[in-house]
Length: 456
Image (cartoon, rainbow, N blue to C red; front, side):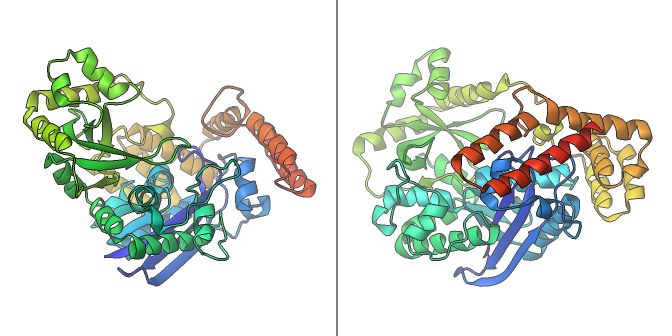
């Protein structure tokens, strides 16, 4: 199966409220030999306020953001959708892509009204995250790679430090294509120097294989990383599935607890085992390429605990209920961008959205009136406003312009970039010397013009 290594550069750190400015990908064969490549940019969507730090890190200038020769975000996403279809089936691979780049891609598809946001998991496609392989290598084959440290002396797992420390010269960090090439390099090192990590990680691409491995009841090793601490290894076994989400399963830490201690515990103890720190039950998403590994040598005590846990059907059911309850009381998201996972589109709406992608803007206005999904209708109206405002009545144009202005001007703590956040970041950039005085001045003038334009 082919591998499609990819990376986004974006206007900020929020997949829901920022947008990509660059996408690069390299298609390889099974031996990780490059076959094809793509490197495309798009201009800034008028409703997005970019974060100054993101521009400073990626080197994207206002001239690039506003270049009329670049495609719009809508056109850019159509290119990505077609590419996934052309290159698939493939394993879509990145560095921290499951947490970030995949979410950027999904939001881009969702906000630009594609019928599905899950293209890298459809049509035989699957996913792999090389950062997770790096974490596994740290735990299982530490001699396979060189481990750099940051300025504070802590172990660093960032790509822009891992790649050069391991001999990848001329890494163009924070450029999408440069990061893709560095990711392929690290993946090749792990494949060659830690083949067991590579092979078991490839198995984790399949949700079905992960589920089968967990439900075998055998003790397994789960490798995860939280915050700035090094990756940790947890020894445990399958402990039930969420009653509300079959992709979310429990993994009982058999080093910390004997399942017999939980068998007769009341519901409050079970909830604490799932929800509190330190967790006795970790939640594993079987559809997100979890870092699960089989073990050659197992402590007999752990084996015995796993065997007994496999027979405790009532305990596993109660743990599944506790995992479901953990997320049951979450408030429904207010903003349409955050409603991406609320529900799937109906088959009727999917057909309409497929037509929306191929027809004229004039016809797209009519398509919106026939959609049942309120999220799609709201996002569609915004797309018309951003791309063909002349097709909307004056009152609608004014109200949408005011809504964007209000988002940018708010002083509340919000998940998107505001003008108050822009000022804060420009000051930080200046203090850190991350850009020249002239570059900061150009950025400041760009944001001042944006602000003045919205007020008018």
